[in-house]
Image 1 (tube, rainbow, N blue to C red):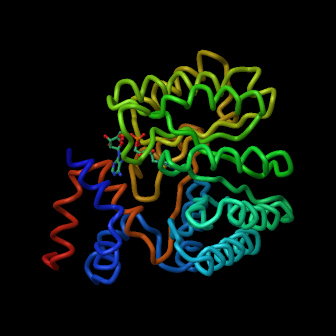
Image 2 (cartoon, rainbow, N blue to C red):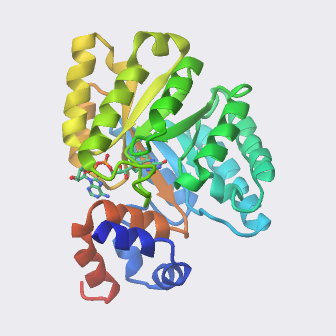
Length: 311
Ligand SMILES: Cc1cc2nc3c(=O)[nH]c(=O)nc-3n(C[C@H](O)[C@H](O)[C@H](O)COP(=O)(O)OP(=O)(O)OC[C@H]3O[C@@H](n4cnc5c(N)ncnc54)[C@H](O)[C@@H]3O)c2cc1C
């Protein structure tokens, strides 16, 4: 119930304006958001790299409503990609197609995405660009854009949400293509007609789809799997499964969000696994932050105290 309320609130522009201008709210959001500027995010990634963690940089700013905002997000990604190579960071970038104008025009969005991906592909070595997956209204268009660009750019990857019924079929197609897939449970509010409402079913789908992506034929086709989760039970299962199947630790990676389960992030690195941290930055942090609260509603009391200034 709380999850639903928080996810509904995440879409409120009025609340977003209130929160992003409230001087105390930032101190709560800062736990999950690396900074407001690329400079601050770069410093965070340098620290992560020193600890053996790699990163993926996300410039926040989804659901833009005017083309100028989409253009400005492209410029932010071009700058971020330049900084990654200039500063020698072990990092890729992650982006949302609604930040590039998917609510305005899909063809224009595809053109803007290609600009970012081509810029990243021209680097030596190429910078990896991951398309995040948003609410189900965008799934089909996002995948179509991905499939078209993937024919020309191998530094492009995608995300699949295990809570959607359609995902087994999507995974099958991606496995045959040899695509890079980040598997996550899914962070949006979806109806039970298209998504599993029960955690047990979502977890089971995550295991099933991980197994499919890690199968020898998929790996031979070029699939590289990223398991994006903080769920210790799933992570333990993945460690056991890969060990018993003889799948090397560098054939896949775990991914976690900045500020979540730091203990587990470091432990996995100490155990010899690849771990990548999703590092968001920018002023438009409100919807991202609310999705993080929805994943762990226990954090809400701490935020309320921060926002009203009792610290
Ligand atoms: C790298 C990465 C990229 C992602 N990209 C996308 C994307 O493109 N599209 C999308 O829909 N979703 C994305 N997600 C979010 C994902 O869909 C889930 O909503 C989120 O990861 C929570 O699910 P979980 O697998 O961590 O486990 P859950 O079953 O939700 O939680 C398991 C345990 O993890 C811990 N935990 C989980 N979330 C939090 C939190 N916010 N704060 C503190 N502890 C927490 C708690 O200990 C909890 O008990 C991404 C997640 C990661 C890690």
